[in-house]
Length: 345
Image (tube, rainbow, N blue to C red; front, side, top):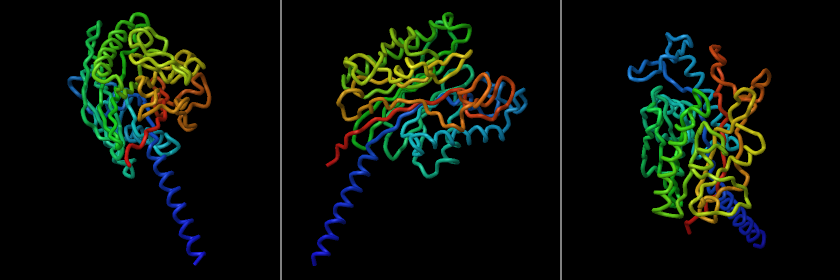
C-alpha cells in the first residue's frame, strides 16, 4: 500500500515537471531575420529586371542551382534556435512566394510553417516575406507599405504583418529591405532616410493607437545602427539590459554586437551590421512578451562560413563575382529570444 502511494506521488511529480517544462518551452519565441541573397527562379518576368538569373544568362541559373540554393537555405534555417528552427523568420531578396512555399514543403514537412508575402514594385522583383509557425501564430492582417524614394527608383514594400499568439497577444512584425548603397553611401543616403521616415510614421500610428503595442522591426537596412537613418530618423536607440525605457522610442537589439565590431555583411574588409532587430518599448519592459536580455546573436553555423581567403569569417554566398560557389547567402542571419507569459489558466 505504501509502495503504491509512493509510486502515485512520484508519478504526479513527474507529470507536473513535464507540464512545466513543456509550458516553458512553448513560451519561448525565437525571432530571426535573413537576407537570403537573390532567391530567384529561372523564368523571365517581362516587367522585371531579372535577366541575371536565367538559365541562358552568364550565371546559368538552372533548376539544379535553384534546388541547391533552396536546400542550403533550409539547412541554415533548420540549424537556428538550437536545431528547433525559428518561430518567426523575416526573409529578404525573394523573387516569388512559391520559392518559399517550395522550401517549406520540401524541407519542413514536420513543421507547421507558412509564409506571409506580398509582391512589391521593386525593379528587380525581389520582395520581403515572413515565415511563421502557424501552430504558435495566427496572421490577422498583411499590410504592404509603399515607399516613394527621392530617386524615384521602385523599391521593396515594408511588409507589416499583424499576428496573434496562442496566448491572445497581438504582435506587429515589419520586415524591411531598405534601398542599397549603390552609387555610394552618402549619395544613396536620402533613399534610406525617406524609408526610415515612412517606417517611423507607421510606428507612430501603431503606438498612438496603443502605447503598449508589441512591435518587431527586422530586416536588412543597408545601414548600421548608428547611421542617421536608423538612429535619428527611425529613432532606434542603443539598448542594453540597464537602459531606461521610453514609450515612444525604439530599441535596437543589434547595437551591442555592433559596438563589439561584429557584423552580418563583410565589405572591403569591414564588417557592417546591416541586419538588425529593433523593438518597441513594450518588448523590453514587463509586458506579456519580453526580450530575453543579451539573447540577440549572429547565427553562424560553421558549415556556412568561409574558412580562408579575403572573406574568411563571412557567409559563403551563392556566387563570388561570376564564379558559382554553391553557397548560402552573402549575409549572416540574426536572431533573438523572447519569453511569453502564459495567460491561460
